Every structure is written in C-alpha cells, then in structure tokens.
Picture 1 (tube, rainbow, N blue to C red):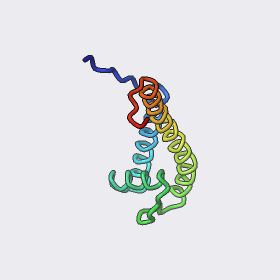
Picture 2 (cartoon, helix red, strand yellow):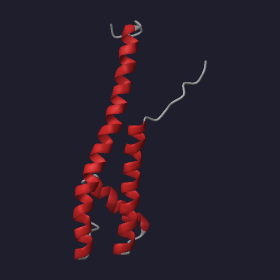
Picture 3 (cartoon, rainbow, N blue to C red):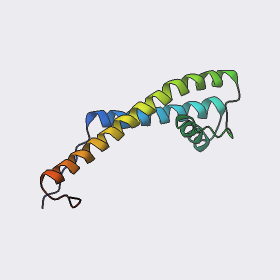
Picture 4 (cartoon, one colour):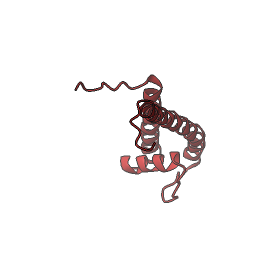
Amino acid sequence: MAKKKYRLRPEVAAAFSALGILVVVGTICYHYMEGWTWITSLYFVVATLTTVGYGDVHPTNDLVRLFTVFYILIGVSIAVASITVIGSRYLDKRGARFEASRTNGTDKND
C-alpha cells in the first residue's frame, strides 16, 4: 500500500507561519525591552496571545506598555484568524472523510 503524501495547504502554512512569527517577534521584543529571560518573554507572549494574562509578569514602563497595547490588538487578531484557518481546514478534511465513508457504505453508524 502506497503512503498517502500529505501536502500542507498554502493558507494553513501561512497561518502557522503568522503564529510563529508573532511569537518569535514578541519574545525577542520583550526580551530586549524588559530584560526578561527568553523563557519569561515566551511565557508572557503566549499568556498574552491566548488572553490568559495571569498577571505574574507585566510590562514595567510606559513604552513597553504602549507596545503591549498594540501587540495585543494586532497579535490576538492574527492568532484568532490563524487558529480559525487551521481549525476550519481540519474540520473540512474530517468532514470530507466522513462523507466519503458514508457514500462508500463503510459507515458503521447506519
């Protein structure tokens, strides 16, 4: 049986890339602007983008707070859009497999 070759759709690749760039840029900016460790910077970025915001780490000066305002507005929007693209692609693929199994008569739920 031949292996099915999986091809990443351009929109999904773009969504993953956007998320990756968003996290990397935020981590670098907070590392240098606040002097935080790389791990603390990454932690803050992920907590911010997921809108969890524990509050244990926070910006300490007005310039970084201003950057954070724009980072939240832009970053959360990009993160939600990216996750929507990735999730809808997954659901479309899953739905197509389900329909194919129903039309082939292999659905065990009938």
